[in-house]
Image (cartoon, rainbow, N blue to C red):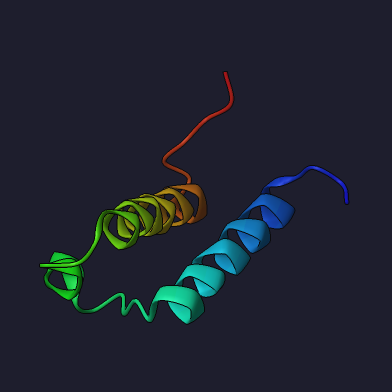
Length: 66
């Protein structure tokens, strides 16, 4: 796979989809969906939330290469 913006975005979306399927996360439910959850689910949600923010930033051009 060639390293470019579109491939990176597609890879991030696949990771987001994986976490949604594995942990049943819903992007519209926020942190409430992990209240009283075990440590692993909370950590997975943290990764999920950050991936969502990252993909939005990449799509909107908010990040630049160093």
